[in-house]
Length: 431
Image 1 (cartoon, rainbow, N blue to C red):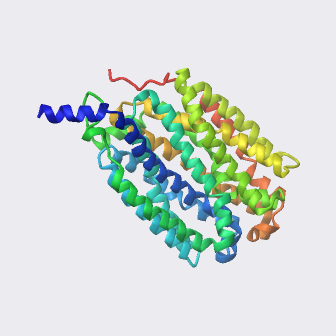
Image 2: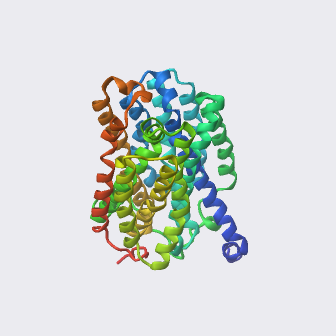
Image 3: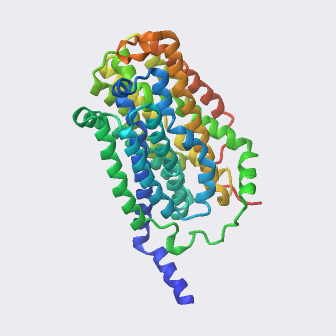
């Protein structure tokens, strides 16, 4: 028995351990990357979807937001599940469900079936981020959580960038329906890799020296929901992320193309630069926060930049192609306070509820973005009237009527940032 234990310790301490840890986390993060690609893809299909389904801006907002209905409601069950079941099995099954959802969406004949496909994608995608971060807490030391939260978020945002210009190019060549079927095939291939390589824990056991106390579902929920700081941190993440959800995941390409006069591919590329900025800055801000030993300064700076930059790209009298590239890239570069908030969510509670804590933060942050998408669409419809059924006929003032709430969201995030407790990058200790 001791020999078996010693063998596991040797594996855990071997030179190959860190490399395999990066592989395990990397495959889970690859699912999150691919999930984001499928999540934002309708943004570059806007015009085609309106024509095929006969929908206005509110209808398009409902279509994009349908992804978030199961995504949001599944977050708490997901958090409770990943603290209890095999992450390897969960990721494999969810990748296959995402592939099925992409097929349903790509073959849909109307708004209802397309929304069902989006809901299937949202249901399975609910597991992506939480599973990635949960594996990070099992395979890496706590001092790397800021970096890994940033890297995970970064890969998701790079997936979103891939869902903009590259998918726009794909759609223009093979059509939006075939594009969704190609994306479905990618998820099937990924499911095989997840099943083959992902392991829940190093050497068959958790990396901590002490076993983690198992709590009941009600106990876990009570700990999370009764903590004021959990709510403040999650709402901060939501209001900071809200403008990205609206511009990056829904209306951004159409706004730049038909409201600001950019070409279709230039509009998609500019929107994708938000996520490329995230991809660069996410791990850097997490690493810097880890090195500083503080979370709040980065969260406050991110919110201040959000207020300034959302005001510029919504209200600027003119927004040339190069100017849009610069503003959107800097916005993505500075919007990574969301990743810091996820790191905070792992530090506010003991590790026996860390999956639930991450999931709750993800749920609230996505809920805000999901609520904003149809709300912005509705505000545009109220001003545009009949023009809202043809996105090509919308005026800049129509778009601005909806987008004007984005700077307000960033301002709310700034206020919330001052109320979040500084964790000093240290996980909570049991008393």
